[in-house]
Image 1 (cartoon, one colour):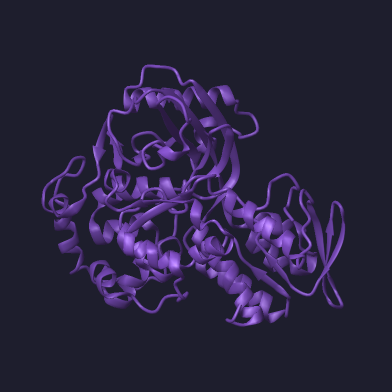
Image 2: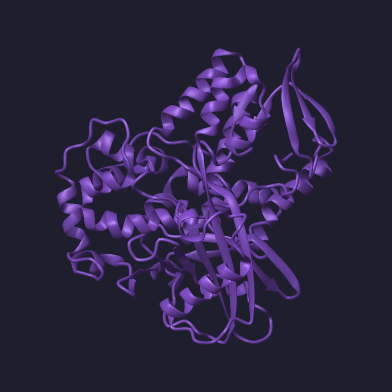
Length: 460
């Protein structure tokens, strides 16, 4: 069930959406399962939640043979760029990148890391990502690298986003070890443990940095849908808007466009605002908290060019807000996943991401902006940033409205308050999805799994 009755099962991924041809089949949906630009890939990838959470699901659905892994040694993993001062700059990588000054930075990264180890930890229970990184690693890294990174992952403003909710690994490292460096090296407390399956073990052995599927990551929710339908243990209502939810003697009555469903317990993956509009007035405190979770709109423009037109090879480049507020970044899709190219002739595929927290400021109201304007802005950026003078041979413009929740400072308190209200009022309701505990695909799947385990036990 979905709030508006128009989208397929499964939500838009917080990374980026792609739409490419493989043979004659159109591939739609997010292309990769991991955040696009990761400053500490290896540390993030090793966490149990990231490494083991999703792969058993892929195995169970029979998709293991469709996985397209990208290892840490791949050029798409090693080469990630920033567009600063009207130039592309390769992000520092490896030991040599830590010891020497690499533009656009004015000093070696290692110097910032060394100084970070003596910075006192904050006594505040939360702060903005920009404030946190400025305090521990310096304003330059916060203004350029972290600003860009947050735009690539959350399409958001690091000066408003919460470090505790967006990057709990960093927050916990400071709180438990007094240092990001020590926390990442030694660990910062117990994390969620999911027993690794064969595919997860393979990913560790082969050192995967990210992965996709041969038919696009959209095939994951499609396969889940097929699995549920074939099991005959679930009743699926597709294209059925949730009108409102009412408490009943046995739990809930859910009013849909195509009928009424009774439920003992609701596990809601609806966006926070959509759920708020469906709940009864008796849940007013919860409704207000849900409505206070902001969302941003992202324009995603897919472009295809004849030939090999990139001046550099890598995953793509991000753009700090100081350089261009409306342009978030460009992903070089052909580099990590050439398997998604057209079968005949060499092509270059790019994804341009625009707007986010700056959409209204740069483009106006989402309902008023035209595809033509967004396409022109995207092709102009490709020409300016990458020196591409030819016109794209194919393009697609998608406006993803209210697609990424924004975890502003104090988000953890809001989530705690909502769940406390649910528990205090004995509501048979679980909150999952990207509005609460993480925006990535892995986060969303983990929150769903956790909710089910709390209801049925850990043996599920």
